[in-house]
Amino acid sequence: MKRFYKEVAVEPAPVAGDGWRVTLDGRGIKTQMGANQIVPSRALAEAMAAEWAGQGAEIDAARFVFRDLADYAIDIAAKEGVDLLRFAETDTLCYRAEPDDPLAARQRELWDPILGALETKLGVGFDRICGIVHRPQPPATIAALKALLDAADPFTLAALNTMASLAASLAVALAALEDGADPETLYAAANAEEDWQAEHWGWEWTAEEKRAKKLAEFTAAFAFARLTKADRPSD
Image 1 (cartoon, rainbow, N blue to C red):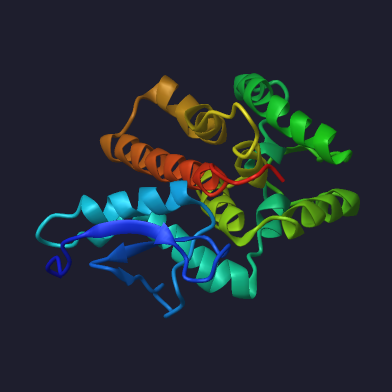
Image 2 (tube, rainbow, N blue to C red; image 1 turned 30 degrees about the vertical axis):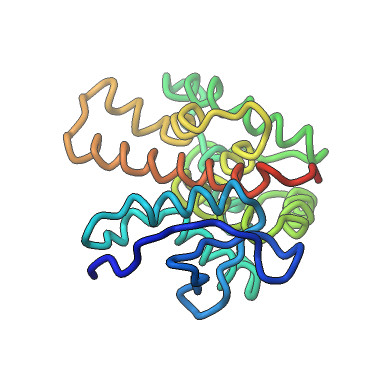
């Protein structure tokens, strides 16, 4: 598609207090499902405007990362919700190598601080499982996670859905919301097993390229979560 606009701007939503929107030549943007694309913070709207302003003569849809996350928040998360608990039942951080396997030490080093912080926050425990055979997490743990997620806004849920999908871990995604979190460190923790194999056997070039792409997507979702709250009062 050829670029069809000249001016990109950010302005308050037409209804006072609703949020912010991007305009193209003075017209507001619709989501992919036809809703008004209103986002909760000016910072996020400006980041989305930068995506539009940075397009060339031909529109590259792959460069609309923030726009796509906002559309998902508005069209899906706000209307239908997001089933993030599915990631809790199969969380990568809970499935470990056998205790005497050298990889297990790396897993404990990288994963226990993330799980431990979440356990302390929620006042529950996660079962650590040796092997890959599925075991349900304790009902109290699932209930506490559900309560936490039920309180999250649709834009946060959209970011969590992307991060949990990429990390195969709800614990890692939730850790990304905490103050001082570093996306590269968190993604490295989630990718510990693949990185371990690469350290010992070397990277296959497509695997390294795939890791870099996933890290970029994880980092973008991490940024999206922060931008939604950048100029809003603390909850």
